[in-house]
Length: 366
Image (cartoon, rainbow, N blue to C red):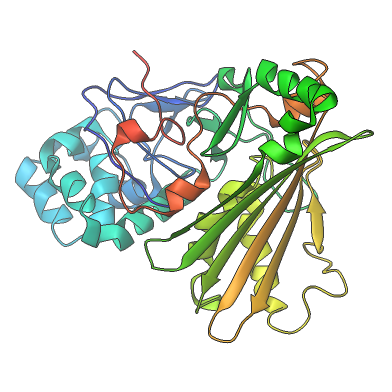
């Protein structure tokens, strides 16, 4: 997943134990789970710091450690041979290093040609904070309730104020509860405004790598189950096994936040079963169709071999039920806040202005 870096923070970031969010006066736009650790982060009264930093300066957390006595030229000499992503991690790790190294590594890694270095930095961040998860609803970093084991456990997020009031599943559609309620009533009284006629959407674009990505959305109404949506992502690509993360980063935006961290498992399993036989019989690891225990979304990943390319298909079935109450189980399981910038727009562009990404960022807090 791409990382769009905003301005350098003008003050030390604070570690908020209540929601594990990163707060800063200026915006840092992240799109992955994790953040660089800082000297002044604390959890359970213990400093929170990066393993990269710890390996370089094991005693950095001690107030009178030899590290504090190093002159600037020595620190610069140590950092000079490091890879760009490691320099950025050091720069973000404490105020002293940030001041000595300056913002040059930060500015350098923002360049389009350094996408690989950005990905490497995000991998380090993921490793440094394995028990944290980026909330797709509010764009903040939350702590996990426990280690996620695919299928058998659920990723639970800390309470989030952004979970109230609206539901988004595509760039094109963001629902408030009252809107869906009105549409459901209109469906029953006027077939012209029926949900299955209003929501029959198809769009297509190309990823930064040049691969074709199609998105299709259909709605239906069942007398028993209420409002249902089916969305499908179809990625046409000549390569499958070589770059699992590439496919996952583009398509896992269609997976609910309870399940998304196990997204790579979908693709790994699909690749093992490809090309012959689309998961028949059902795979013991991921199952052909998988259901989220929280929001009852159902997922299916298939790899379909074509003549000149392979097609990776992610299908998501979502049941909202009848919108009888904004606090109903079906609604609460899916609701998200803000203007969610969907996975499709995210996948189809290399770079964004931070103002164009209202979601999936670490939002500012004054």
